[in-house]
Image (tube, rainbow, N blue to C red; front, side):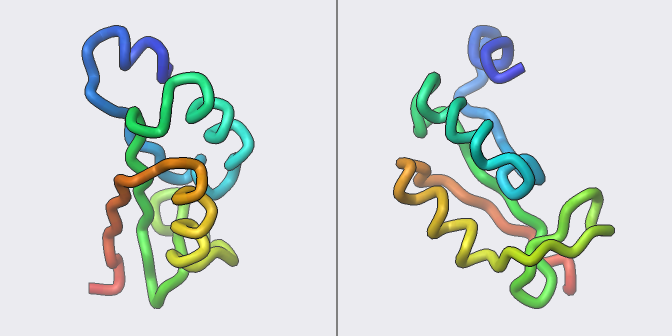
Length: 84
């Protein structure tokens, strides 16, 4: 789907829950398409990342997500504070 979206003209692809659940796969995409083609998004509640439509609490904090993806070249992130 990443390849298809980019070939259809998308400037970048947004990755959410998969960035937490399957970072190895996301890293493969970054290596294949380049880090400038991705924006990583997270839904946050009390500094903890929530996935599956805000229903599942992870053990990952938003800072952990940044620390994982910045070294891989990702510069774009967005966050939704779902406690508000």
